[in-house]
Image (cartoon, rainbow, N blue to C red; front, side, top):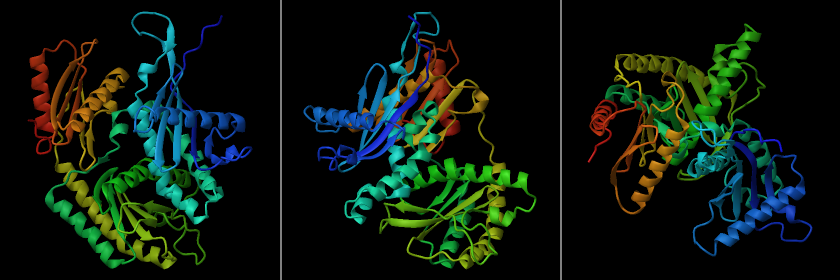
Length: 460
């Protein structure tokens, strides 16, 4: 019998269904709102949905909390009920390979390499991003008097692109945090940024909310943190990279590409034509005074990016974009220079070559890390998984009412993992240097806390 070839973690299927549909015999497929892979036979789709419904109902007999994961030898199935009667299911193929990298003990399914919390966060982010563009699923159904056709179309349009960009093997504890990277500034520079945003909103009354980003770090946000993290993740991870790639290709194919147009990441193709193609997307903000859709205008000058949210009921005319371009360009150029000048005066603390760390503030979702630093080389998957387990322990302690904790772990590979929690702030450290005593590790942790998180993290 041929030995099964090694494989990596991969997406087996992903689907969305509503339990209130498909009750009539012969029309069971009506409850399926989206299914990936799209070419899957309808009988297989119905079988997967039926199995998921059965698992959810079975687990209700044992716990009031809804089922969130099912572990099997070959797969890991994640469950999410994002809205009443709606379920999102993601099934992963568990990687297959050698049991040990040190001793050849044959091959097996490596379920221990799949951290459930990490991929539950992946599923949660999939919903929050879909909601950003589709809106609440139930609201779409209500707008169509219960007809699912429009929701099916919207979900298909969104997920067929979104799922292509999933990098499951790159997910780690930062995926669990789903936080925001803030840009540290001095008071004067930050006040300058805040005054600029206030001036924009005062000069353009149509603008309801604003977000200012510099070099993939958040400078200022007028949104609730839950909305801000979704917008920030989309703009920094999807929109800006796509825009830069498109501009690069445009410059290679033609020398007439106007930098003036390139400054609008979302907006018109041209500021001159009377008839223009507007590429401004509409996004849903659910944590504002009146939850609704907004036009998302994104304007970029060098490293500074301004996101403007205009109520969707407003008609965006070409003259508005012209006025924005005339108003923003010079001011944002000057502000970019000011921020860049300040950043050059800041001396980053020296980094220990064998140390990685990550900080997370639960209250404002702020993250700071040196976990994926390419200069330090590839990170150890086993150590990163250990970080997730340590975080799970901190979450459990917080639920039990413990706001402070400190844990030192020494792994079988002679590495150290340290976790500190205080006042909803968490700090995790990986020390990859071997043969260190507990005293040496404690000194390294104190030094790192002092240099990296001075004024932020207060150990007990």
